[in-house]
Length: 118
Image 1: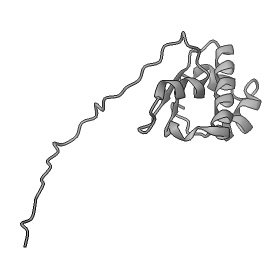
Image 2: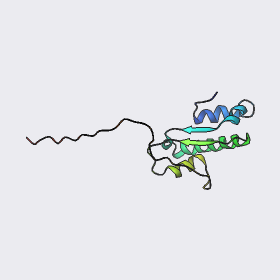
Image 3: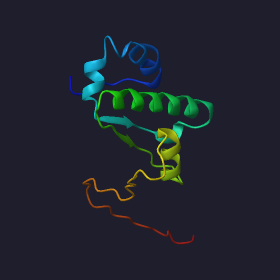
Image 4: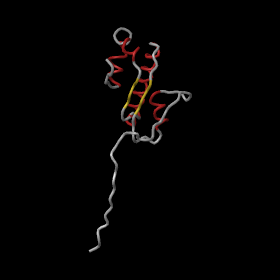
C-alpha cells in the first residue's frame, strides 16, 4: 500500500492503539502526513489533532523512520506559527513555507467595460 487516506479520529481510535501488533509495518514505512485545509485545525479540535500528530510522530520515531508533515491552506495569515503549533514542531526544526503557486495554468485576460451614461 502506497497511500492511506484517513482522518485524525481513525488514527486515534483504530490505528494508534494497535500500532505494536497490527500497524508496526505501516508506521515503519510511513514517510509523509499530508493535511489539507490546515486552517480548520484551530481551537479545541486543533489541540486534539495536534496531540494526535505528536503521538503519531513519537510512534513513527520508535520505528526509526523519519516523518515529514505537509499542510495546505490558502487562508492562513501566519502559516509557520500555525503549522508549528499544529505539528508540535520545535523552533530549531526547519519549516518551509511555499507562497508562490507554481502550478500550470492558462493565461488570464481581464476586460473592464465602462458603459456610457444615458
